[in-house]
Length: 251
Image (cartoon, rainbow, N blue to C red; front, top):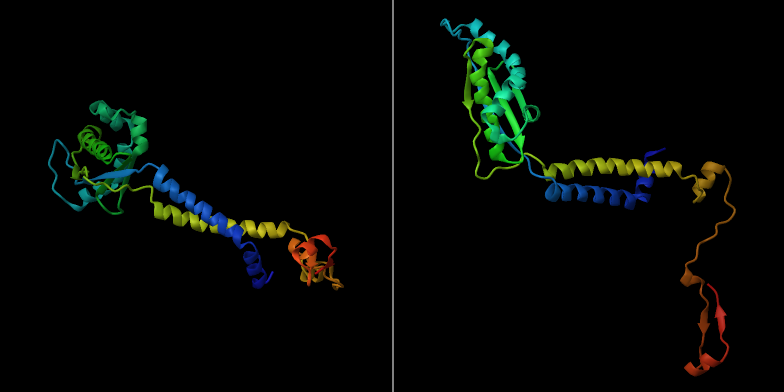
C-alpha cells in the first residue's frame, strides 16, 4: 500500500488508537503513583588494595596491583555466597531473612580496570537497605583473610541513612513514557490488523480495486429524521390542523 493508504487507515481508526493509548498510559500512571510500592537503594564501595600476606610484608609494586585487579572477579562471586551471607544473618538476626533471600537482593559491580567494588541493595526501606549493605561489607572484610589469607579489602564508603530518601523505582514519568510508546505501537498494529481482516466493500474505490468493475449507482443513507414525513399546515389553525387531513412530502 502507498503511504497515503496507511495514513487513511490511521485516520479511520484514530479513535481506537487514541482510546488504547490514553487507557494504557493512564493505567500505568495510576499504578506507578498509587499501587506500586516505592523501592529505595543503598550502596557501599570497597577498595581491593595490594595483597598483603599476613605473614610477610610485601612492597607495593605493579604486580600487586595487577593481582588486586584479578581478585576483583573472584571477590564479586564470593560476596554472593552462603559462606558470607550465613555469617551476615548469624550476626544480624534482626534482618529476619534467609541467606538465599539476602543473596537475591544483593548486586555487586566493578568498574573495568578499577580496584573498586560496589555492593548495592534495594529494599522498601532505605534505612534497612543501608544497614544490610553495610553489614555485608563488614562481614566480607572480616572473612576474606580467612578465605584468601590476604588482608586487602578496605571499606571506602559506607551507606548512609538518609532523612529524605528518594525511591529509585517506580519512576512514574518513565513508566508512562514507555507505556505511551508501547501502547501507540500496539494500537497502530491493531488498527492495521482490523483493516486487513475487514473484507467488506464500502466505497467506489473498493469496487474498482477489488472487483475491477465500474459503479452504476450509489444508494445514499438517510437519517431517521430525514425519512420522517413533514406536515403541510399552511393557512390552517391549530385546531383545524389537528382535525383535517394533511398533505405530506418526503425528502
